[in-house]
Length: 294
Ligand code: PCA
Image (cartoon, rainbow, N blue to C red; front, side):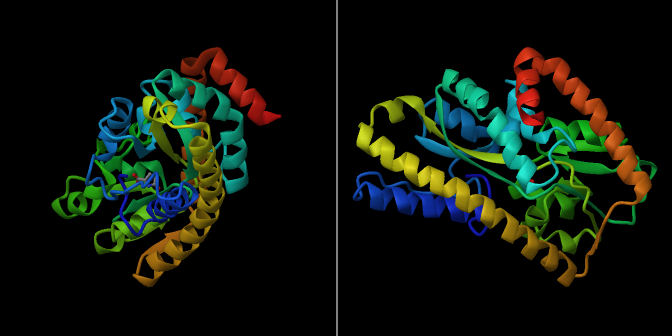
């Protein structure tokens, strides 16, 4: 797992591991390695696919280059609430699971991050104020919206954000209140804008050969624990977001809604990006968006 031990995704995964251990009478004992200590975020998917490890948690949208559907959850402003994020996931789940299966991966559960906002060292009222700012990116959408806004995206792992801010490799973030809190963003940054751009999801994935080698009963127990983890994960995400927003303020950050101008400009970039995505995702993407719109 790529995110720190105290992060709600990591806590949820640890609970999931406990559930599996109990349900299989200790036969399946999943040991969690948070913070990218076993494999870095960017290496986790490949490690699970190749069987270097049997199970892992990954932000799937970081692999949108492999398949546009993997970036479904990061199309800006199409699902800007937990309810809509859930609906979008349900619309995309069959196709995404099928695509993962074709890569030798079994999708166990998926949990949304809180809404994505923007962090700066200064007041920002329009994209003109962002010109040339080095911003940390973590997937195609963060990179593209940064470019469209005139910023300079730099892709680094979440575990390297704090160091990146201190050394000046990055001077801005597009992420959740939770990851800002995990990175002590207030030590280097002063403003958090609740842009509500999208809610990317972490996916817990299993190596298909390892999965197939299990008996039906064991697979059934794991699937039940996974469904529980997905439901609990959403609740934990909501709670963690509320707590993190308060924590940012408590530590002196200004937590703000974007100005009308900024919100409008970003929505415009969002439309451009949604069109680009539809272009790439073709018929499969269109079917998912149609199902979501229903
Ligand atoms: N935190 C993760 C992904 C989205 C989020 O809120 C990160 O910044 O890497």
